[in-house]
Image (tube, rainbow, N blue to C red; front, side, top):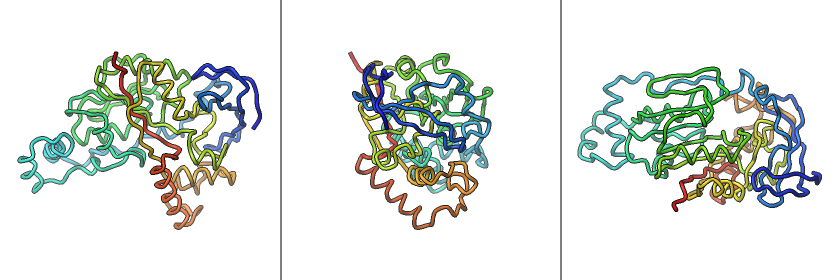
Length: 341
């Protein structure tokens, strides 16, 4: 760590901030990049944003990889009946009908799944205050396939849109449409806008949140899930923290800097939930040992990995749960809404 003069892009503080050198380790190129951490808002950010960012998202990058569509294998009648059951489970409607239907069909498993092993889907829906299946939902920076939107479709939601400027072309599966587009070019307003680990990749943070504020309906909610530097894992691993991910992660916000950014764009944080997983520990341990995340023996890509013992993996899960409960996790979900005049 050294000290040098930089201007923070979040709070605009120009000062001698702490600087760090981090290395690209997802693919193991070990290319080095400089970051600095603002003395005022604590945001950790890349010193110089690469002009060729697209080069760091090669075809093998996970956002370009399709996944299995969750609604496959269910006929229309089963899906229809499960949707009616979900009306009760999510919105508290039609209890008498539900008592009959539960003898015929189970609730879809997706209702109880977690988004990227983090928050429960039902927890997001309830915190966002969604009232029916017809409310419009937008997922920003979702890649060519959004498991989150696919799960929402399997539950019964119908107005589902994803947007990502780095994908090769538009995609469509069922009720879900993904457009190769910047947020600024998306048409419409939404009840819920989600950014599942995408905000940290976007160069202009303030303009992005301004666009979110403009795309939200008056009572709409935005969910931003990001890695946060206000965490035990950053303190423990430093530049070996797997969430550093240079140069793709341009910003690693603190709790303070994200709240500041929101307030500057007419938004306020009304709830924060921590949702880190064992990944944060085993990935950081890999980097500390000089092992790329995409190594053939990485637990991230190989379920039969022998890199860590079963006991070690269990310990990582226990640690993740512990820091989630203490509020020291390196991943957090911020729920935002418009600041009412």
